[in-house]
Amino acid sequence: MRLIQFTASNGWRGHEQKIIYLYEAFKTEGHVEDQWIVCPQDSELFRIATDKGMQVIPFEYKSEYSLSYAKAFKKLAEKKRASVIFIHSSKAHTIAVLSKFVFKSKVPLVLCRTLIKRVDTNFFRKWKYNYKGIKKIICVSQPVVESLKFAVKDHSRFTVIGSVTDINKFKKQEATGVLHNEFSIPKDYKLIGNIAEFTGFKDHYTWIDTVEILVKENKIKAKYILVGKGSMEQDIRDYVEEKGLSKNIIFTGFRRDIPEILPELDLFLFTSNNEPTGGVLLESYACKVPIVAADAGGISEVIVDGETGLLAKVGNAKDFAAKVTLLMNDNALQNKLTSNGYQYLLDNFTKSVIAKKMYNELAKHQLE
Image 1 (cartoon, rainbow, N blue to C red):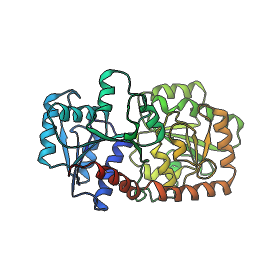
Image 2: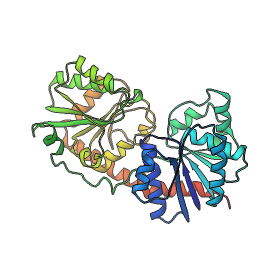
Image 3: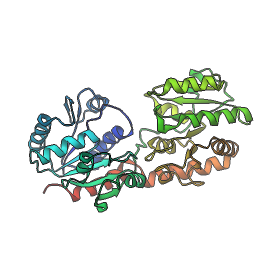
Image 4: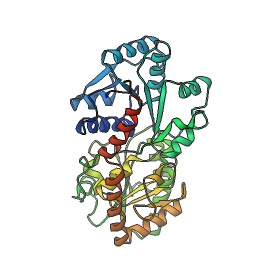
C-alpha cells in the first residue's frame, strides 16, 4: 500500500495526534510500502511530523473549494502512485472529492470521522458525504456514525474503529511531585484534574460546579487542576472567580509535557458532554490514573462503568461529586479500575491494535 494521509486542519487535537500515531504504527508494523502526510504548511502537524523525520508534504491552504489545489493534489497522488487517500478533515474531504469529481483522480478515498456533528446542513455537504468516490467512512465511535446517518444514504459504508494512544509515550505511572512543586501545593493534598481545550462541549461549567460541591463538602483535601487553552478560557476563569474557587482551582495553560504531568493526578475528572471517545481517557489508562467521566457520546465505548472507570450523568455536578468522593475514598476500587483500565487499553486501543484494523480496512479499498 502507498498511503497518503490528508488533512487541511491547522489545529493540534486528538485527530492530528492520531495521524502521527498511525504513520508511526504503519511504518513499525510494515503495513505500507510508502506513505506521506499532506497538511497545511503552517500547521502544528507539519511541524511535529517534520521534527519526527516523517515524509510530510506541505501546502498553502486558501480554500476548500480551490480548484487549483484540487488539480495539484490529483497530480501529487499520481506522482506518488498512491493506492489510497485517507482523509482526516472536512476541508480536506472537499478538496479530495473535487480532485476526483472534477479532475478524474483514480485514487480511492477513505474518510476518517471523529466528530459527533450532523452534516446534513446543506446540499453540498450531503453530496460530498454520499459521493461514490468515498469508499468507506471510518468513525471513531458509534455515536459518530449515528450523527452521520441523517446525511449518508448507504449505511453499509460506515465502520467503527476506536481511538488510539501510544503506551510507549505514557510510560510514567507513579507521581513524582512535579505539579506539587511547580504550584507550591502541600504534599498531603490530592490532585484532581482535567486536560481539555476550553470549548463548549468539554463542559467546564459542570466541572467547576462539581468542584464547588466537593469544596463545600470538605471530604477531600485536594487542589483542582485545569490543563489547556481555548476560546472559552476567560469565561471559565471568570466563572471560577464568581464561584469563589480561585484558591482551589489552578489553570496551567497549554502544556507539552502531558506524559509527565498526567500521572501526577490522583483522579481524572472528565465532564465533556458530547465526546466522540476521549483520547485523554486512554492516556489516563496508560498512566494508571482513576477516571470519573460523563456518560456521553462515545465515552461508554472507552470506559466500562464500574470496571475501568466510573461514569456520571451528563451535566449533573452532584452525581460527579458523589462518584469522585466514592472513588477517592476507596483505594481498592482505585486499584481495580486502574488495573482493568490498563489491560483494556492494551487489548483494544494501542497503536499496533488500531493500526492493524485501519490497515485491514484501507487495504480493502486500495487501487490495485
